Image (tube, rainbow, N blue to C red; front, side, top):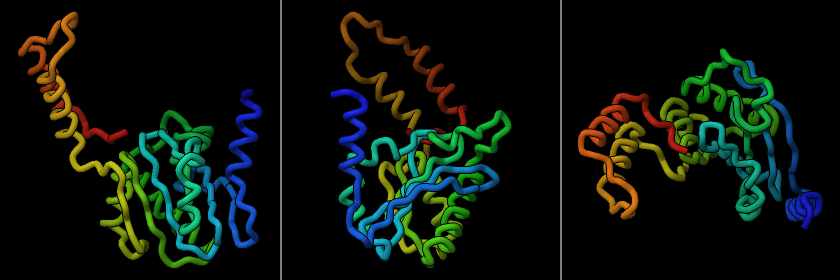
Length: 202
């Protein structure tokens, strides 16, 4: 199968033929940065569910055709490429604000845009990995905007998780031809992990 044929097959799989459906894309300015937004669902009157992707910079849109179609039967699904990610990366600059607070504010602005654009009062947010940091922070700060928050691979404490993952790997059996790191090496690496900034997940 050629790339062109593959794209045609996926496009056909993604078609929503019923008249009540919604299927649109737009670049929306959030926090002064144009960010790519996709809105899809079998019925435009269904509740809004925003997917907050992982990474950072790991957009869910390229693989959404694999898992999203069934969800669209019950929700109007909103995917957006976060700043410096996917199609939104075209306006990225060296001084771009990539703090967690800015990502959360972007999500707030996206919700406010959806409220005006689609006439909804509240939305649901589904966070994945890094996206759960954004989602749970939003849920804590602005619960008035949400009818629900859900998480896949919720990040609890990135720094502690990374340290434990490293320690667990050091304790696991190593291949016979691979030299196991010395205790001093493991201690040094664990110290470096603990002094880094909190991990953002994947």
